[in-house]
Length: 421
Image 1 (cartoon, rainbow, N blue to C red):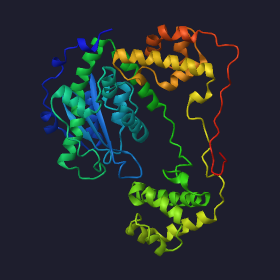
Image 2 (cartoon, rainbow, N blue to C red):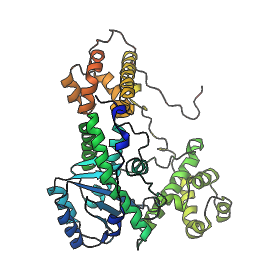
Image 3 (spheres, rainbow, N blue to C red):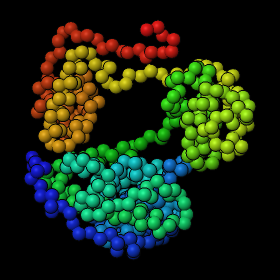
Image 4 (cartoon, rainbow, N blue to C red):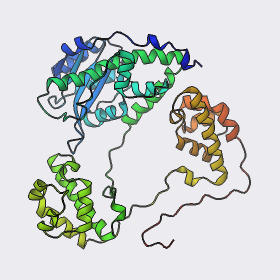
């Protein structure tokens, strides 16, 4: 195994000028332009993608902009103008190029959900940076390290649903995609020297598979249990639930971020005070006057509904926090020993311990105790590369026979209001 210190860091920074890509980039607004771009890209080995959404401003988080770059050109794809994305889908299905993302789990999930574009094979530069022991994982840090300039992130939270796009918005978006190509080249060189490239590709395959197999989002019926709600009485909780639901309905109707209409502190105060008149609502400073003028009557109706509602079903069912609560005392000690081995090895490899093996996986191993390499791999508790690296140290512990008498796991009962200590 190559030690990180043996790599010559001075050779990692390369000469790269993104200006020609940005100056010559086109905004693709038709299906024909989209098909032409992918025809040109069909001979490329890699395609870099960055996705922008206006989820900070809108109720529905959706793909509002796609920036895409190859080794030869860059472009902006406008999903708000293009109705037919079949050329994009055809390219992903038929071409064997490698797709480059940074923090790609969110981006490829958005592409799959909104546009039915499924990325078959990808490389995540953030994941690659983790595996070389990079401390700062943001795209800005990688650009500074490898390309010698700093990305301006001031537009990170601008409203990407706005049209027309400003010149600054175009340049910001394009730069994120264009920089991924040389960063990828640098990371691959380091990863291959360390013998870790295949590990990253396994992790990236897992990310892509999760996006392809993602289940439809299910609304949380206890989403109204926001910070501060645990101190409310049951009746106030009922009011909070009704007011929360009203805010969601209005936000969905207007396609606006819910917190921009009425923040959570306002919801807590309304639930606590339950004012029955407009004048009573006006006393709560955190309620915007515009919102009150437009929706005051609806808000009063929601408060009344909460005051009259049945008080059942307000408490979220208690679940154990993690697998530790399902372990007996011997299994708990086994999990602790596995964790110590993992932490020591991760420290020597200079990667985060959670990358080498997630902690919840260690608890699962302590419960199921696979005793051979084959069983460890087939359990899929760890990814293949993780299992093979850790097997030599893990298996002797997992092969131990538990004592005949072990204390049964104790399930902790959640304290409820009114319980006597």
